[in-house]
Length: 485
View 1 (cartoon, rainbow, N blue to C red):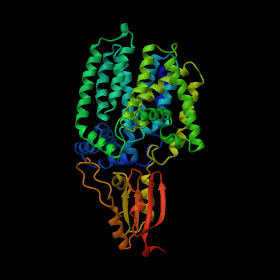
View 2: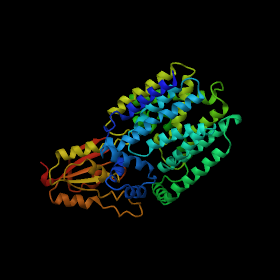
View 3: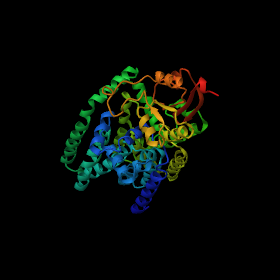
């Protein structure tokens, strides 16, 4: 296919899949964190954003700008993230085509139209921009090391932007520099180009990393208290296998193998994903006819090295854009040898968008706050009390959707815009529930799944009248004995 025609088709498909039903899913906890800052000026909001989460403010700037342009709705918050992420199909296709004579269209299509990619593009959070900037950085670095000064001029600000979005862009920076060694010596630019880029990226990394050392220490303390601190090599193996099997599927199947095998549908999807992805990766890594040795080593490195994050953390596929790029490259390479492989893989990815679009919440978290608020407000009396539990941004999520004046309290949720060492202590929900019971008030417990004791621990003299689960949000209506019919 002609390059311009391919790009036009890919961009249309990518934009269409990313924008379709963009506002259809409820905010989840981290999006609610962002939503709670949208009525502030950007300097004030950016300062608060980075105090309560270990992310620089680059991703928030995109969401804040999007809401300013398109409104403070789900669609408005997500629009610019969606457009940026959709655009990443351009550098992916160009990068693949530069290295492969055929198959680039199918690899780029799998990158752009899989549930993994569309989900990232429809979240008002940091990992969609991280994936997009990763794709652009790799493409431009490849051109820069081949002597393009224009590409180098574009690569440097994109690399800085990548670090302003997320610290793990350091893996992308290393991968971009590693491309220099895959280019034959006679075709490489002088070492001055990667040396300049290295200096700029190191300065950028230090500038965004050092201010967050306190938050990283606090996170390490929380993990130690939970008994999951330290280096765990077993977690690397199990985590890498789990992430690899879901690089196209995204969060449509559970993270654990036991959960994925719990139903016939998820089992079939898991097996199909592994059956399609594994031969492509093995073909790229082991076949000498398709690619040069240098680019095969590079692909193996960008696929495997980021999984070292599992040594100290519990990431999801959203944190692995380099692995997804390596998989797209692998799919394109196998499609260049097997004509049916490309259409079959693309059809698999696109077919999975049907169940993805039918979800009312994002597949990784399944927090349907929109449905929970609507349920409570449709059934609650004016004197009822709403108690928000679980997610630290439960209050922000409730306020985003609430159209009532119901009395609401979040006793377990400290100010999310302050660090753990600054926020005030949590309140005990039990006395609050007991006081409401003594007054004969109905209490609506709305609990997201982010930890904490179950609702039953706080009932006291209250009795459950109704119990509904919306995704991971549990809504319990509890009444006192005097008001129970």
